[in-house]
Image (cartoon, rainbow, N blue to C red):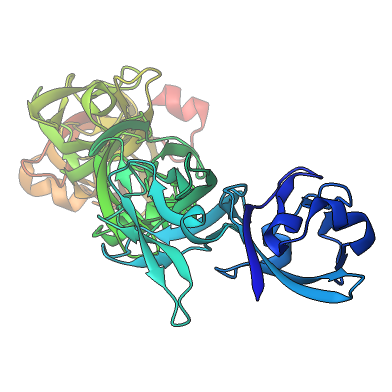
Length: 535
């Protein structure tokens, strides 16, 4: 028969397992001759030859001997001599809770997307406890938290492992990292435990739109800023991370003028001018900007850009009508021209005033907004000044002012305001007697500074001390040249001298004229002195 003993594992060397001699029915006196000894492959046990006690040969580790087997029995034989005999012995090795549950890794790293649905399970490696039965692993515990719990599962072959279960949706923006402690406990008395750290990184889903710091921005720009001028940098922030927070900026819902004049860096959000601004074209712009992440989540802001007027427009003078030529007898205050001014700047930069350069005898009278009349301010005389170049200067009230000018050429038209004037106050003519008929005896000449027919002169004889009927047979005058002709030979005996009145008349309307007197002396043809004296 088998003799059975039961001992806990890990007893000290030479601990007594039981008294073999007594249990085999051997008397102590016989022991020296029987020479009890253990026959086994491993020397777990020895026998005390004096007392017959079965002793532990060396510390025994159940886990080393039997591993995970629930029953651990060491079987061996006891040999006795004189007479030779063999006894069978079985020692049951009882488990002691000398092993704590142990996790393979002290830290477990998990990445869990924030879109993961509650109820999802994440299997974990079990903790191992080499002890058997109730001393081996019994239960898992997880740090108290609102997002995860742990349950025990079994593989088809009966091995237990823990599973992490998600209880509710994660929110990376609120909490992007969770650190939990998983504890494994065995059933010993007292129980032993092991832990592992579970580190959970919450990975991002794109669930946040980019946000601008404000909805509306206001910027004021001088209209003379150069292209490339930085207007404003808009920035949107996105609580997502990584690629989900990569924001691109674009103009949104803007008219093509905005795209033509402003540039938006789609990565940095910087807005710069790309063309020259012009207050006169547009006094303000509205730039709507959209910030978008890769998931097409977007938000918007608008930038009000106000353009400030610079004095960059030169005032213009437009002559709308000129009344030319101008009669020289025009009364003072006659309107000569209508003038309009224009300046596209605003405020003082566009406020224009005009004046006449120099003192030409013309003045500007303000007529209505932006209109002036150019009027005469002195009497005119074509014969003195036939043409004027009037310079009109328009200046705005900017600082510094801008100005421009226009020259109006005025022609003065003639009025018959000059009578002919004879070049001599009177004429004295000597004619030899017996002159041949048709001889030119004199030429009168008058001048008239008027123009055209107003200055065109005709000559005539209007009076004489000759008898009216005789006059035409004595002399005539060429109406154009003023040459006076003798119509017949004058006879000194019968005629000594005569008087004529000549008239120079212009062709104006009304016509003007002047008269001059001419005395004709008829001389002695031979012109001998004694003749003369004789006569």
